[in-house]
Amino acid sequence: MILDELRSKALVCTACSLSERRTNVVFGEGDPRSPLVLVGEGPGDNEDKTGRPFVGRAGQLLDKALVEAGLSREMVYICNTVKCRAADWSTGKPQNRPPTDEETLACRQWLIPQLGLIAPKVILCVGAPSAKNLIKKNFLITKERGLYFPCEYAKTAMAALHPSYILRQQRPDSDGGFGLLVQDIERAWQAAQKLAEKDAQH
Ligand code: SF4
Image (cartoon, rainbow, N blue to C red; front, side, top):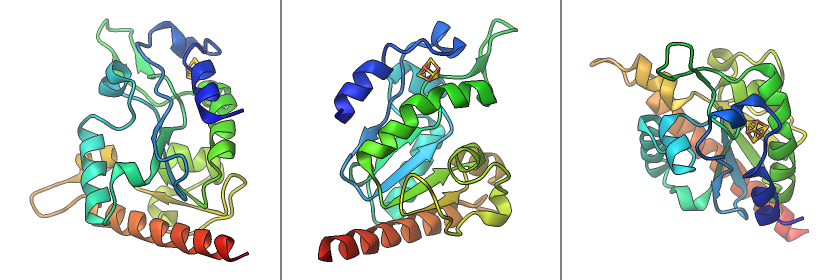
């Protein structure tokens, strides 16, 4: 199967209850031949409206971090653990919430083949839920971000702070971890490039 076929199937998925309120399935975008894939948590309001990953305030911060790391969106592939927006609708006004374990599990039917078709050298998990899904269940983002881990779906995987977390931590005297995000993207890209070059030599 090619990636476009997988996308077409995912766009009409109703495998979990998130399908009931979504506007768009946010499958992913970027260069599917890139050695580096960034995997976030899930779409928010802006992503649900546009069908594109990381386009709200957090997405703008991620774009800024990519640029500071010498990259652009077009040089990597960006997707999410869960492809539909998870929100609490109990007050009438939707509030984003983390996807449940069941929703995350249901959406692995798209994420895992997606990673299999792209076959990245390095996966950069953006935020703890992604790292818990792809690296290990008990991943500790503040202690273990920036470290390389074995990964079933790439040669290696690393995790970085989520831009939404960074935005919440930012103060006049603190970048909230933005410098760490840039550093982790730089290191993940360098590792991905090295692994791609090594593979090309064989
Ligand atoms: S979140 Fe994933 S599994 Fe659930 S409906 Fe959307 S695409 Fe399907």
